[in-house]
Structure formats: C-alpha cells, structure tokens
Image (cartoon, rainbow, N blue to C red):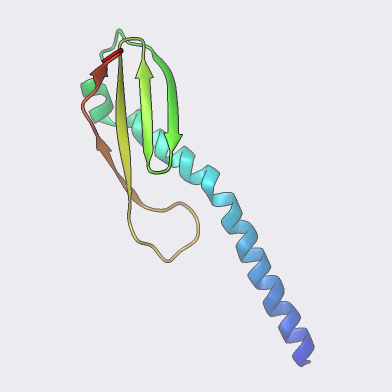
Length: 99
C-alpha cells in the first residue's frame, strides 16, 4: 500500500511538471496578444506603418516596423500557480530606424 501511494505521488508530480512545460508557449501568446491589442502600441505606431517583425528575448520584445523600432518590457507579477504568469507591459518610445 505504501509503495502504491509513493507511485501515485510520483505520477502526480510528473504530470504537474509536464503541464508546466507547456506554459511557455501559452505565456508568449498571451504577451503577444496583449502587446498587439494595446492602445499604447497604436499611440506609437502610425496606421501607415507595417510591422516587419517582433523579436523576443527574456523580458523584452522588440517591434520593428518599416519606419521605426520600439521595445516593450514585460514586468512579471509574482504567482504561485502553473500556467501563464500575470504581467504588465512597459512601452518605450520608438526610435527611427538607423539611429
């Protein structure tokens, strides 16, 4: 009986870890959606501009358009649960390309 309890506990831990491995994709998608839907992005980027690419590294996204580049910081909030981590976005003023 003790052995069965240990096996069940180990399986539960392994399952929880497997779910935790799935969360980075969900986290990135949630962050990207928040950036794209943000009114702040629309304040900085003109409607005539085209987003060429978005680059992500650590807690920072770089958005490059045909005219300028800007950075968006992700400030993570503490949490004790699995899944997407709550966050705030900090938009930095864009710089013209080539500067």
